Length: 114
Length: 315
Image (cartoon, each protein chain N blue to C red):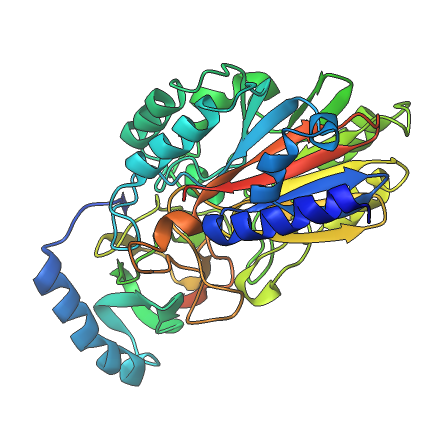
C-alpha cells in the first residue's frame, strides 16, 4: 500500500515524529507495529529499523528540501515529499528492504521486517 | 597590452565595481577560456573586439524550481520572470533557450503548468530541456516526459544541430545508485557513441545535462559516476562545452578542449561544497539574493571553433 504526499497536521506531526526519534533509535533492534523515520539534515533517522510484518512505516520530512523514498529492489517508490509532508508504506512480507532517496542517493536506510 | 586596452581595462575596472557581482564573460578560443568581467563585456560591445564576440547563440536557464516557497526565496516565479526580462531585453535575441533541469521543485502538474506559462514569455521560442531529479520525483516519473518527452521519444536524451554546432542533451538523474553520483547508463552512452560516429572533430559540441558531468563534490553527489565514458568520446573534438545546473552556483573547469560550466539557479543559491549539513536552499539577505541568481548566454565568436559563455546575475 502506498500513500503518497498527504499533508499531516503539521505541528502535531513533527512534534510526535521528533519525540519518537530517540525511542526509535533505542528500540530499533526489536520489532514494533507503527513507526516513523524522520528525515533531518539529509539523513534518515534511524537508518536501520526492525518492524513486524504488517507494520506501516511513515517517513516525515523535516528538511527545507524535498526527499523521496525508493525501494532499491523496485518494490515501491514515493513521490517527492516536501517539508513537513510524509510518506507511508505498509510492509506485509518479512524480509530486508533497502531504501534510498533518489534525489539525494547518499541517503539510505534499511528496514528489516520480521 | 596596447594603450587602448589599458584604457579600456581602467575604465571598466571602475564599472566592475559598480556592477558588483554582475557576472563574468568567458571567451573561449581554441579551448582556452579568457575571463572578462561582464561589465567590461558590456563596454566591449562598443569595440571591434566586442563585436567579434558575435551573435548570442543560446541562453542557458537552470534550476527554476517552480513550486519552491521557502524562506530562501518565497517568490521563484518573480525571479524567473526577472530572468526572462533580462533575456528579452538583450539587443540581439538568442536563437535557442536551454533549460538544464529542475524546472519544478516537486514534479507536480501545477508546477509544470506555471513553469511553462512563465517560459512562454521568452521572445525566443525554441526551448530545449533536460530533466533534473526534482522533475522526476513523481511516483510514476511521467509528468516531465508527458510535457517534454517528444524531442527524445520519451528517452529524455537527444541531439540536434544549430548554426554548425552539435548539441547533445543528456539525462543523468534517472538511474541513481545508492550512495552514489548521477548516472547516464550504458544504453545512453552507446547512443552518444552512435550519435558522434563519423562526425568531424572540428564540429563544435555543446553537451548539456542537469547534474555536473565532472565530480565537483562526491559526498553530496555533485557529479556523474560514468562521466569518464562520455569524456573519452568527446576528447577528439576541438571545442566541447559542457553545461550543467544542479548546484545553484557557477563552477568552471577547463580540461584540454573541454570546458565545463555549471550555471546559477534562477530560484535560490546553494552552499559551497561541503559547507553545512547538505545541499539544501541557502538563506541569504534579501539584497544579496539577486546577485546569486542568474542566467548564462553563449555566443559564437568569429573563430569557427569558439564559443563564449557570459553569466548574468539578476542584479
